[in-house]
Length: 396
Image (cartoon, rainbow, N blue to C red; front, side, top):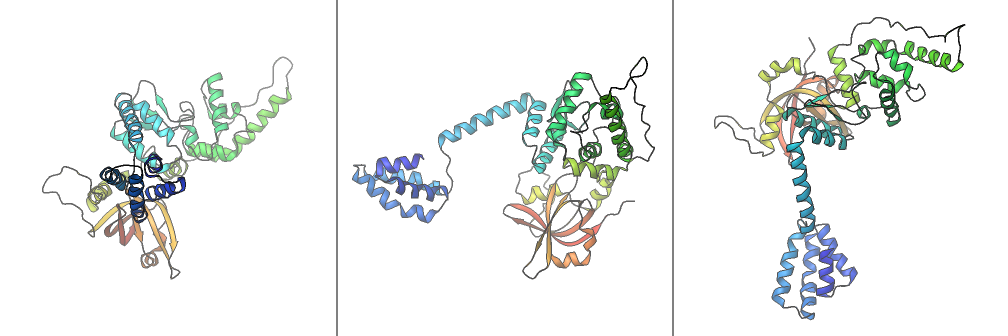
């Protein structure tokens, strides 16, 4: 807009002509920009602007075809950068909680921010029915952040609002039965309740697999309880009370499935990581993904002169868990994949060609723990691995 004004006022451009200049700058079309040079300089000369000054102004404009960022914009960004740096340095827990809340819909960004919290010695706790609020919140007097209830998939704002309002009015929930009896069943549907259970919000009240196994019994009890309350039944001297429910016993969910539930509903592992039990083996037989992304990403890290750097085209072996899979069909009608693999340090994209998939199609599933050997590559500044061999690490 500033350059359009200069072109109009000093070079006699019409508004439409100035808009062509804006397009050349905004779209970074260098050829179109250079076509405006003669018109711009001649227009300035007609307005009694010295040719030397006209050329000097043009040379000031030319770099904008590569990147434009005016001074007022830069000043705004500088102020924001200063303010956020101050908050992060002086109120780190509050700052990170706010940042996690603002990025709540971007799962990959949340994972990156939680990794940053770990580096800052800030613990991010899983959601809890008596501790969580709607958004990520600061745990008072502790270096901790608690997951918000709205971060759980299939759990809407109206449900969360009622859970929190009821807790504020009548105190913490003391059991799963207490929770079921106090929260309106019309708002809390079966799918939402399943998600809350699997995400672990009731872990301080009851084991999640036990609640899930007794879900139908709990929902029926809730309906009966509501009917009794609404009917206003009374005994001779006191109100009729509904019996306490007894939950059927069942074995606790195994750690692997519990973590997969968290990944499904929260977008990441919170209470642990399925690779933790394989840490030593992976350290011995594979290269950490963080080392690969750091070396290929060109990050400047001070290391021992004897330490080997990973270079593009090098054959490496990584070990990790498949976190996402994107399939595409080639021109020949074959399927190839772009899979995201993460270990305990970082994540990377792995390109899998059709011939690799044909060798072992069953291994390419989300949450499968694998070792992958392949060639390193960099595309658009992003490190990748072209898979040559994929093997599943079976649970012992």
